[in-house]
Amino acid sequence: MQLCAKPAIPTRRGLLNGAAAIALCGPALAAEPAGIAFDSLYKSFGVLGFQFSDRVTALRGQSVRITGYMAPPLKPESHFFVLTREPLAICPFCQSDADWPVDIVVVFMKEITPMVSAGRKVVVAGRLEIGSATDAETGFVSQIRLTDASFTLA
Image (cartoon, rainbow, N blue to C red):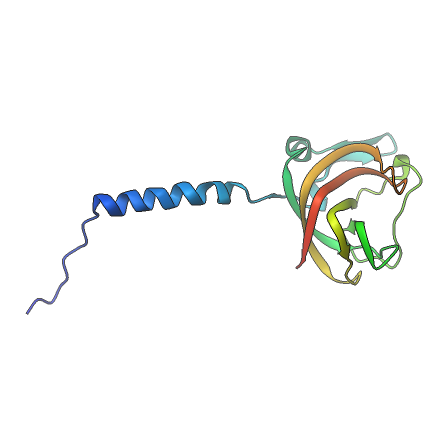
């Protein structure tokens, strides 16, 4: 009667299967969007303007994710919304980028999407764009945007 089992010796097939699994999963793991936070959007801001943080500048054009609150939308379904650090009772639309609040991000969805209650936290993923831009359809001016975005409830 044998009390101890022999240690398993890896086979060539087992090693090749493991290597193939790592190769297939590697791109999926690398594709996970980088996380950003409202506190890390700007290096500095004040009466003389603002500077984007080094991290945000480095992530320009890449897929990112950020957690916040959906500001009250203009209509129940939309292709865009404003993401805020804290829940708001009113939508923080601006007339110009000179008045741009540092704690909001404009989110342009992949498709028209039903909005959620302003008090619900959401996690948004999309391509990061920075710099002043005016949306042709709405006239909304933004400094930081996520495009081709989607969201899930946090």
